[in-house]
Amino acid sequence: MSEIKRILFVDDDAAFLQLTGELMQQASQGVWEVIMADNPAEALAALKEHEFDMIVVDERMPVMSGSQFVRLARGRFPNMPIVMLTGHVSEQTHQTMKQEGLEVLLEKPTSSEGFHTLFLTLHELLALERSKGFSGLMQNVQLQDILQLECLRRNSAVLEVFSKRESGEITIRTGNVIHAVVGSLTGEPAFYHLLNLQDGEFRLKPYAEPAQKTITQNWEMLLMEAAQKRDESTERALAAPRPEPEPLAPTFPALILTDQERTLFRTPSKLLAVSAEGQVLAGEPAGQEAVIARLTQVLADSCWFKSAAGLGAIRLFSARGGAAECALQFQPESLVLVQRAREAQP
Image (cartoon, rainbow, N blue to C red; front, side):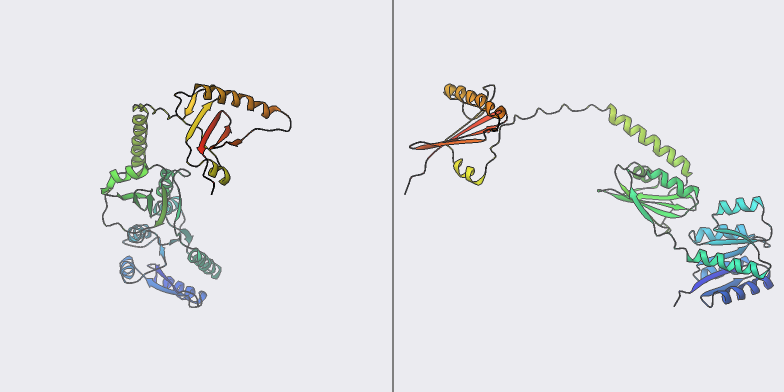
């Protein structure tokens, strides 16, 4: 079963209003509930009493025009689709439609084809799924561009902005920024803070009336001021003295061992690492001059294996003596000597 849609028709011509209401209900086969008001006061009372899915209003009415009624309705129901009917389509009427964010401007039907076109248009508008909001990353889409687009279209929405550390909201009503909040900040300070978040995210949500209105300044001035504050912040960051980088700690060759090698290298009694230039990289060099010179020579001689066809590079050499065993691990620019006492045989 289809969901019932409630539509408010407002027109001072009682005969036209009655005919339109009956035809629309018949064409919708009972899916539409049409409520009719022949003056703006009655229409405003109906808006307080019921929830509507759409408003259809005549432009030319005494006391209050259709445009004035739309302005009042937009303040309370910023996201409701509104269609205006007029018997005289002029450039001024088109401008009014644009300024008030009207969905459609149609000529009042005077024939069966006209009423059928009116029904199809309203049906399509009701079938369109209302915006459920969207999200994005601030490094890919500029937040100020989203704000500008929403304001130029005179939309109403809540823009949620958040990063890893904080989150806030910017409320837009009929193209005007009326509220912003983040943490303990509200109003313009909160607005500027949210627009200058780095690598944050945003989500555009359906409009919800804020508890208070904290911003009155024009949105264009707000965006200009936010851009100026962002430039000033960048200039301060560039002018700030940068700390001297800390000197890098010396790196020593690391033993990269298999399980078998790890057994051989456990609890060493001597460890000495030398570079190709004869510099001691790890271990105690005192009294080891002859050993250091010998290891340096062995490392130099091992380079021959890299260029000898079919031999490749030496990685590990181990040997066992009577009471000790030792191993040499060859690395690209260093050689590591590890020596330990042999375990007693059972």
